[in-house]
Length: 360
Image 1 (cartoon, one colour):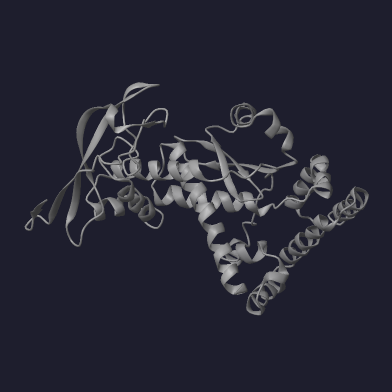
Image 2 (tube, rainbow, N blue to C red):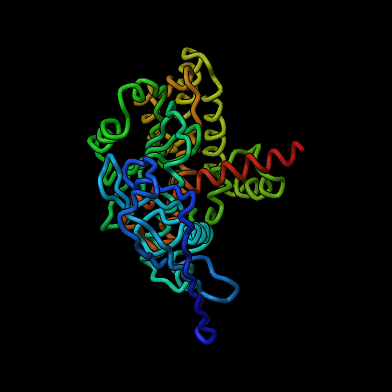
């Protein structure tokens, strides 16, 4: 070993005993006896730090004569790629990127930001390759606006696991066709029971009362039963000042009951009665909403047969927007998808562990 105390660097040389040595071909994964070693090589890789010292390890590796593939480099578990970093070092970098921005991790590790992104992507690729993929029975489709250059990004997610599955660079019909063609085989396409497409436009605030309603959008969009007493008091004061806002909120609350029906006839009857209430209310935005609901009545009636979670799509999109903002944009969509998948899976794992602890 070599120690540079002033530069805080440590360098180690590691050799393996050839007795009982098990070599694996990097291409086919077949075991190769030590007698078929063709060449001895050295690789210098960065490993986890030892105390305050930045540590590099010089590892002795072999090129072997594989009976099936010919002369190939051996597969080393702690050296998963050609990059000069050990697997455990890349895992430490990947785990750090889950809670901090790439630039922060790069400064802490003394690496370039592009190097940290590459390490993080390899870490996520290995994680994604070994995990079990859940079947797709209920899918959600929505788009995210990425700006003038990136335009729109189509997001397909699994509604049951709240996990993004695929990104498309545009929001055309051909974009979704490409998902079914390239990502799903015939058996998987037949397994899809329901598809949820978000067409709800946010409520528009009137210009005259904009200052009055400012800061209360979340309260207006929340269900009354989910609000605390203090929040209900804020809304009641707002309703006293603006009668039309009160009418709009009551109509929004009553529309929520539409999703409780299990029979199509009863759902159609309730929706018809709700639309009739709009005749004398002078609420143009709700008139447009009613027209949209009637236009997509077939899709709404499908909810009677297959219940899906509407909020999953927006939750997934919120996570993706947060990742984009924290990373100041992503050029590599594959990397962004892996980050979003990891975030969704980590949240599920935390909820499961928290539930088990409470049960215990």
